[in-house]
Structure formats: C-alpha cells, structure tokens
Length: 165
Image 1 (cartoon, rainbow, N blue to C red):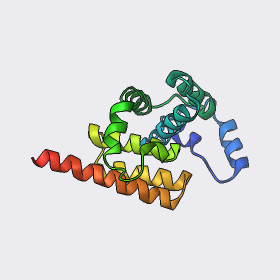
Image 2 (cartoon, rainbow, N blue to C red; image 1 turned 180 degrees about the vertical axis):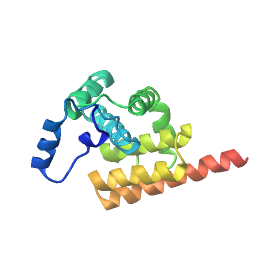
Image 3 (cartoon, one colour; image 1 turned 45 degrees about the vertical axis):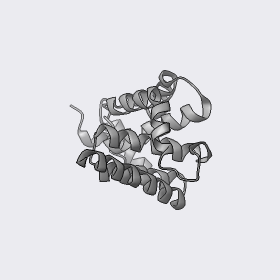
C-alpha cells in the first residue's frame, strides 16, 4: 500500500527521490480545489490566447501536470466556454469606461471564472472572489488583483440585490 505522504512535495529533491524509490508506485493525486481552480484559469487563458479546443487544452494539462484534470476544472472550463458571450455581456455591465476587450487575457479569464462561480453558487462568494484575486495577483500584478476584486465585488452586490428583490 502506498502512503498518502509519498506524493507530498518536500523541500529536498534528494529526499523526494528517496521517498519515491521506497514506494512501489505513486498514486495519482486528486488536485485540491485551489489547484483545480488554477488549472481552470490556465485552460481558460490558453483558450483565449491560442484558440485551441478545450479538449486539446485539457489533454495538454494532463500531460504537463501528470494528473487528470479535476471534474470541477472540466465542468467549469466547459460551461464558461459555452456561455462565453453571455458571461462577457454580464461582465461588461461592471467594467465602467473600460471595455472587457481591453482587459488583459489573464484577468479576463479570472473574471469569467469568478463570475461563473458566483453565478452558479459553487463556492461561498467571498471564497470565489478571494481565489480569483489571489490567482491574478500571483500570475499578474497587485493592480490587476484590485481590478478583479472591484469588478467581482460589484457583480456580487448585483446578485445579492436581485435575490433580495
């Protein structure tokens, strides 16, 4: 039986090799929700930049990362891609004086992902916004994170106002 700790990353490359050599097989790890969300962002971004099909991008993700994409990643990427025009129309209501097309592809992909999570009520709203902001700050800039935070915050207030009405 393979220990669940055998796939945990450790600081030392040599210790990692020793650990892997000591086990018979390394079981594939199901990515955490954070990693699944990051994977979804990367696939949406790559779709935006390259125009490749979602199936091809998910296969490339599988090859690059060494694990199959999480069902959350697959469902999210598929549904965001299918509803792209509708999502962009809704997001455009909250990007005052700044057309959505002028926002960088990574930030636009994060906005779409965050909007989808808020709209579908997949995760608590604060978590969905915080994770979108965290990803943008990590892979873009703090200023881009502030932009994403402001837009998704406005989306959340609008959704809450509609629920109360």
